[in-house]
Length: 133
Image 1: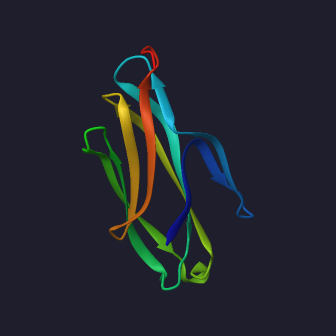
Image 2: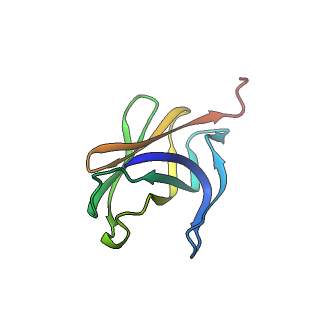
Image 3: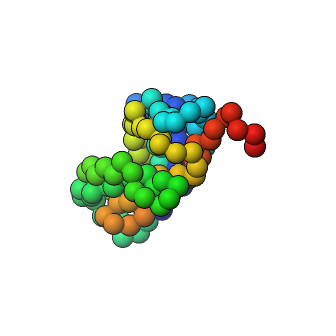
């Protein structure tokens, strides 16, 4: 699989007809003091299938990399590519998140891995809005 796009957003949904709706895309989280808490967000990924991608269940790993390079909030969950839709050109992932605490300002990255292969990296920043830029 290869990534078509990956975004952080406030909300996302998929309609019964397969349309992907994304609302409030962002790459910066503002705060005035630490910790900064992100109450709710979604990570939205559209991936395109490539020749040789097989149907089946895969382990998906999501991890946030902090400013110092440390792994924060690692999570694993299964995804299943149904054999009935194995030939579908694109697959959408909507990953709901909430209550994430940022203990320092700086640059972060969400990484999504499927079967130990990096599928997407989504960089973002947590900034102090009281400091001059």
